[in-house]
Length: 256
Image (tube, rainbow, N blue to C red; front, side, top):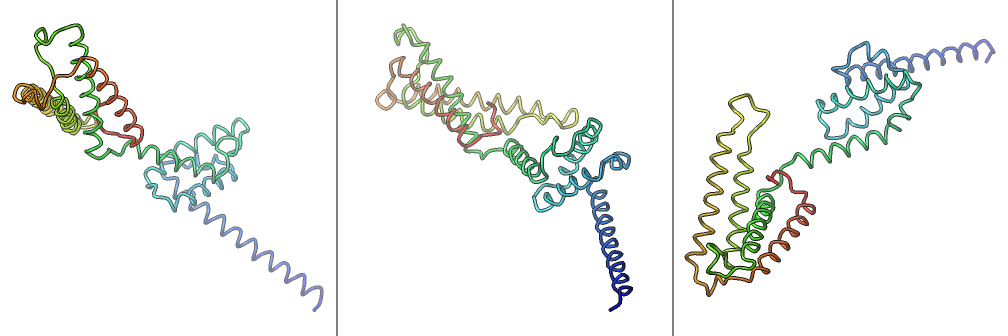
């Protein structure tokens, strides 16, 4: 084979390689423009080639995640101006965000944390959390009110079984009240303030009536009055239990 043939073959291979590289750049550019919907062409053109490649890698890695297109667009709309600002100060994407893999992992981690905070907990957890909180407060008030007083001097006292009823009904009341919380993002007149007021008032009224009624109806044999300190101890223990369970289950959606 002559040197001329070898030279022609090398030149032909170089042309093929250049063509493939150009095609890859076009694909990446098209992908970049497609994923950056909402970003102006001017902003896109301001990105350096390295930053464009960085954004392409981020989008490629996020493609396999459950992140919606809307959320990805919001993320990109924050990242692109940040990268442009960094370019003006001589900062690369590594200085600002780190590697594409690190950035993707951080995005998904934040999204998971955000999802956990916005996902409402099961009803039983909300009722348990509210019952322990409100029940603890009511039990503590009862215990403090009994300190230094005789039974004849106190108008209302809770027996042991009434305390149990107190916590249970407090949880139910808190659950229904939390379900009726106003929607602050709804249009004016449809936020649900009146519904919330009516349901919360009715729930609290039923709770108080049943607690006081149980104390009046239940015999002392099964509903004995406890020493004041016992009420205070019960209130403290159930409050600590509520704190522990709230952290363990990350309870979200209640009133407290």
